[in-house]
Every structure is written in C-alpha cells, then in structure tokens.
Length: 197
Image 1 (tube, helix red, strand yellow):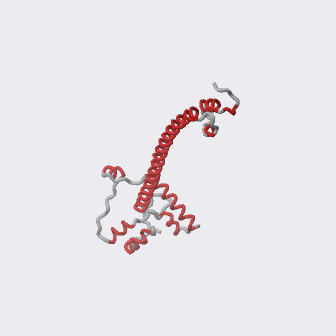
Image 2 (cartoon, one colour; image 1 turned 45 degrees about the vertical axis):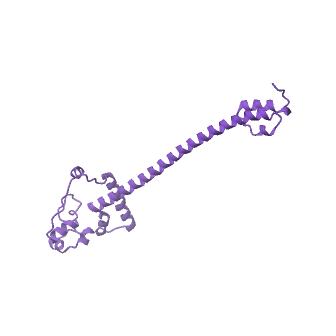
Image 3 (cartoon, rainbow, N blue to C red; image 1 turned 135 degrees about the horizontal axis):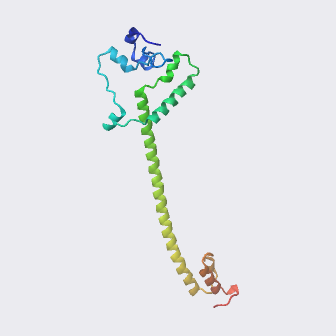
C-alpha cells in the first residue's frame, strides 16, 4: 500500500523492514511506487547522518570486496522462491514477503556464503594436498622396499644354488617370474630329471 506522510511519520522500523510501506513514485506502470527502506524511515524520525552509498568501483579502490553479483542474484532468487513456496498462495498484500531481502541483508548473506565456500574449498584443498603428499611418500617407501628385497632375493638365490644343491625346500621360495632363478632351480634339483650343465 502507498503510505501517506502521516503513516510514514508514525511508521516503525520493524514495519519498514517488513516492507509494509511504499512511496508514491512509480517507475513502472504495474507497480505502485518503491518500497520505503528502514533507513529512510529512521532519517525521517531522527536527525541522523545518512550512511554514504558507494559504488562497487569506489569500494574496490578502498580495498573492500563485495560478494559476486551473480551469487547475490542466485541467493535472492532462491530465498524468495523458497518463501513463496513455503507460504503457499499469497494475497496481494502478503506478496511483499517475497521481497524481504533488502540490500544490506543480501550483502551480508552473500558475504557469509562466500566465506563459507572459501573455508570449505581451502579445507578440501588442504586434505587433498595431504593425501597426495601421503601417496607420494608411500610410493617412495614401496620403491625402496622393492629395491631392498630384490637385491636380497638375488643374493639368497646364489647362496641356495652354491650351498644346497640337494635341498628342494629352497626352491619353493623362488619366484616364478624370474627366469634365471628357474633355470638355476632346475639345475640344483636332481629330482627334476634334468642333468647338471
């Protein structure tokens, strides 16, 4: 509803925050004026200094970062649709509840969401980096163990061939993938039927 001067004079900040009042200036044919913000009502009730309004470029020069405008559009769209769906069918007067996010509330919500996303991403990046570092160190340890066990197996095979030519239990420990070890095992095993070379 369009507010008269007396209604605006007697209006409370809570009513203005709930978007109850509109001023009669209309920019569009289908609208009846623009919403009166709480700071406008405060300025009419008290003699306060107005908060300066800066453009995004001016704030960037001062080092103040605002949330991304696409994020703010998405947040406003989501919250207004969520409220509209949860309340159900609204009368014309109650439709103002879908327009409740003023600029400061939307900026605060956008800043909170961006901070939350940044903390989640940095935590995930840290955990991924730790996993990658852990896998690299495990891979290095496995390579060192393989090198150590490979050199020990080669020494053990030579000792088995030289010292225990008649012992068949040493042949069970040989790996089947090593061709040289298999040839040596056949040579050292008299039960295999092959002659010594």
